[in-house]
Length: 219
Image (cartoon, rainbow, N blue to C red):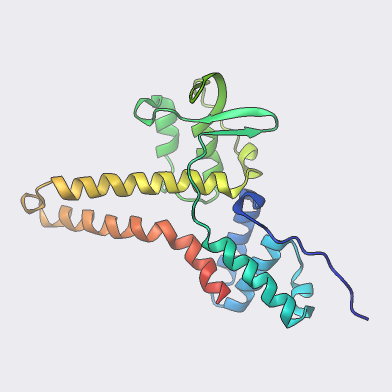
């Protein structure tokens, strides 16, 4: 007798928390040599169904979930959300990065990379702080006191996290393009020029690297 199971298909990245996303990343890394296992773990984490259920479902159901996840992975229109609400408290993204406090700057730059990994929730906790004053589109957030609450951001949707990450990737690309355009590279040592060129490629690749992993799994 066939059993009916309700499956919650995510409509957007808002439905996927950072905690769930990091759990998925761990399983994908543990099964790098098994694309089918990676695909099943993707379905498991994003749709909340066990691997046993995935293996027993009909081909029609399997394809329906695949199409839904395809649409999710292709959605990269995720702008920076400057104001978010967590547990009834409004948080604001650092309004002026050029004037970020020295302590916040040190705590962010101590991480080797600016990627969505196990350190990302800590970085978000530094960048997003409670709003203390707001007038129309302008706002002020509390000063950084060195307190990091990474648990707070583990249950925030990936639409917020990807929006902030894309913001930094695009900022890096803009700065690099400006440097390459207006700096006389012929007057630089060859190794410096090579580093700049490689950095540009690496930044561009990182923009879609995590999304591309999922797209390949959906094929």
